[in-house]
Length: 228
Ligand code: NI
Image (tube, rainbow, N blue to C red; front, side, top):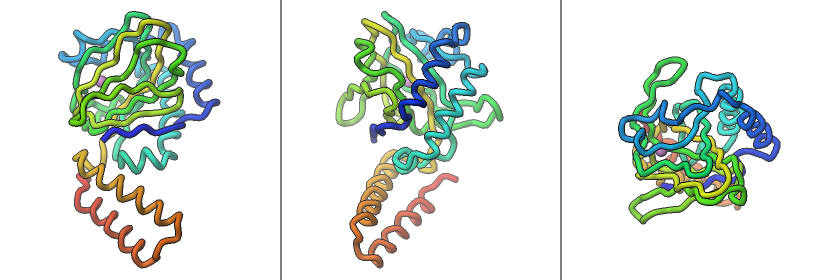
């Protein structure tokens, strides 16, 4: 399931991140430092050093926004968020077709994190660059994603995806993975649709007994399917 989540960051948070990232200078390193053997040959971009102060300051802004975002929580059902990373693509840069690695080692506590859901949070508005679409393939075909600054797409980490070459300007983004409570994408989709329907029933004052039963089913399915 691919979900676009609008306005994860507000205008002041975007400015704050962009100021830090645009002035990071030597904090930017070759993106291949974190690519596996499959990704490295097709990856041409730059990343902020994960261990740098700039990365930590930016991670705090993004994670606190995610923790308050009900749509992200409902669609992803996060267990562990891998500390968000930041990349940029200048003219001629791209990331060829690849599938993200299945496990990542948490940079601080060394835990293994299974990458169930991939996320890209756009930090540059579409009019500032040409090309740079995130192209994601799923069973319905290929999706071309290019969102406003502050908007985010989440999609199954099992998906083949690529970033098209940049032909003008620079594309800056945040990307990260989440280990979900629910490993299976189909189960996550059912829970997301159920939760969305329950929220709507709550807002429209539907029958209380029926709502309570449905909410119970929702939580009991999470209990049934959760891998933790
Ligand atoms: Ni990727």
